[in-house]
Picture (tube, rainbow, N blue to C red):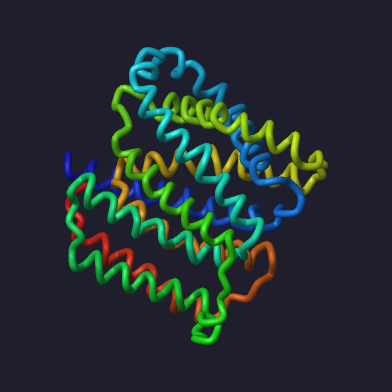
Length: 303
């Protein structure tokens, strides 16, 4: 019976990771689509304001009741807030100012590799042969997806300063994901999430004030408002809750493997909203990525 319960929890853990990745797939389109409409720090700031306001009615009571535990673990919460809330998503929006959605997706899937390396050193988790082969298969599928099977397209991909920012964001998100495994057990998901949102906003506030005084005032037209609501309610609140639960249930390595599906879901979002074509290359890429994820996860015994 206990084993059956654990199996059900593991299945739900994978669904949590998939749900977060599906939601985040639209974040790159927002990052790139609003690059001329709203400065990156302002977009990040209003994103977390919306997420905090939506979460507040549900998490205020747990936050108050668990206040002693929050104060006790303030250093840990401050580090996770700074990495996951203040810096990570802000860097994505900074990167979106000068690079393409293709490059954002290409660099973003380096995150699971950083997770595996960090987990190896922090939690002493072995990098098995199956996991190594799985990563190679996944990477092949991602490259096939991005290049559409054309070597010349891969060779002609150009890189900008935004790519460096996106690489930094991937490393930071990997570290954030690894740290989530250390979440104090006395803190509920709601209290943890609200406290990190609030701390992340506090750390972001000075930079937001500087940007507001430096750049022209933002005109909140409907496109900007809807985008902020999306990234605030879904890409911030919903996706982060799902991702945090996935890390706690299946661990950072397994969740990191699911993150490789990001380009697949980004392609589906582009097909749905931008009428971009889906062809056989996408099918073969999906097959390789999913096969690689299955192979990489087969030998993971614990996280």
